[in-house]
Length: 531
Image 1 (cartoon, rainbow, N blue to C red):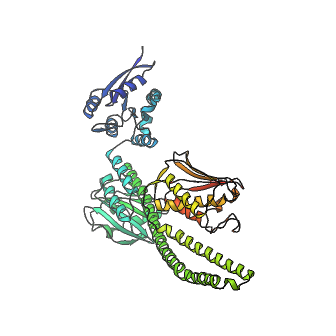
Image 2: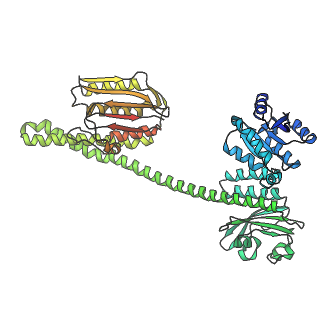
Image 3: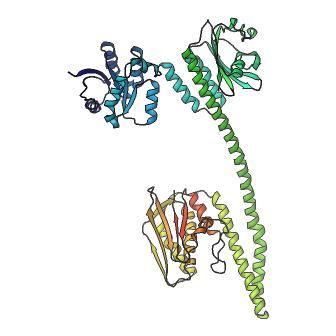
């Protein structure tokens, strides 16, 4: 005859309850499952029936699963308690087990429920009790305090959390927060029924917090008048009769947390453990604050450096715009006058020199213009809107035809390509990319330039501009987007070497990336994403 297994099941979903009932079918036993859908049902069941195991959802309306676990543990520490929840995150399972659950099974893995119950039933109750940290209001409060400490960004917040938590967790009549300052203990804060030592500093050798830090040990003192470590002159004016002092950080303590009682009290092992956990969490919080403070200082310093750099850049831009352009305009202007008015008097060599001067000043002017545009990109505010990239490409090609007419160019533009971005900046980026394609296909009898898109592995749109021009050696691809970086001679393909750096900066401002693939004499393809 099968053994009868009595199970209390806390669950408010009928479908889940039925699936769990079916998952518990076994040749080893016959299940009698009492379904509780509310807190009241669960409490009544626990008072009136002896069960072999409890299965619980993480919560039902008005009743948390951890509260159900606490209720069970108050009556029977050894009763197997298994959470069966729709939350399959590993951290949720760890949290429930830490609270005192025997085990945890996600509802997506009900095939694991039967062996989990069998394993729980075979575990001796004494072993279950020994290996579990039973849920309690103090544990719940400690978890909440740890969460608060993890979010603290300054010492004032840490002290406010710790001073109250130390009293609540132990039921003490007072608590203090101490930090080590060289050879002194600074009693920074306190929460107590009477005044203690807030704001005072004592030598490490003359106070119990100093002893705890120097010896890296917990001090539990039931009677302060019977312990030689206590400076009685400091304690006699206070209400303190008993205390516990916990160092903050075992290795190289940086402070201490103290709990005080107005009546004689021997701190229990549980009280010490709770305060020790609080001290450990406080240590981490203090280190986080120090790291955060250092980060803020670094950010402030970096911000100051960037502000100075921006001022220098603005000064440089002004200087380039006014001081450099002025003499360049003079060279250009007078060279042009020389050509217009005296060309007939110059021989061929002199005219050649003059043409070179005019060409160089024109190139210098364009370089200055490109550099100023590049420098200004970081200060331009993005105007996000929907941009028709296909229409933009056609407009740019029309401009290129007017500036440099060519007949043997096959243009392929995919229709209806749109993207979110700044229309002005995207026009500059595409203009540079298409100008390059136009330039590097200029020696082809039949040039082909294609603008299209494809889907990336991450689901994002990847746009590309492909040509059948001169191409470049792919081993130098990482140099493409640097300022003044050129992979072709100026005499072969003129340019300033700033265009692709400008394109990259615009793409990055849109949260995208750009890269290229090519081979010598086999064309080039530039890919980019936006956001």
